[in-house]
Amino acid sequence: MPYLDDRAARLYYDDGCGPCRFFARAAAGVSHHRVEAIPLNAGPADGELGHLSEETRFGYAHLVSNSGLRTGESIAAPLLGLTLGSSWERVARRAPFVDRVLRGLYRRAWESRRARGCGADTPG
Image (cartoon, rainbow, N blue to C red; front, side):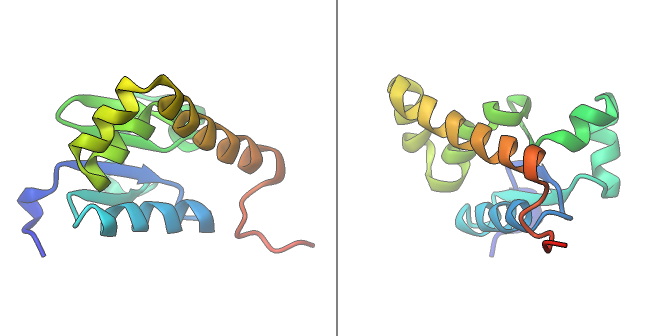
């Protein structure tokens, strides 16, 4: 397991959402812990996301790395690169279809979560 200093990015996610938590932790594990998954309401989020409106901060996933802050569907290609390797990110960026698919998957998950609530919620 790498040292904490080896972590290249922080992925902020909604810890109250089961699917969000699952995908964030999976990304951290698959990346060999180059990505640190941090809940949106955790202390470190205040410093890096404090300038965002509350709706933006808690409405999307955010990826903070050396290249800056990315929010929502714009995290797709960089997160792919951090988890599976930089060649995968290059493929996503050079093949517009792949980038559109990744962004579309994020957007559909976000829209579903927004319309129906979190997948971890139990039906009432």
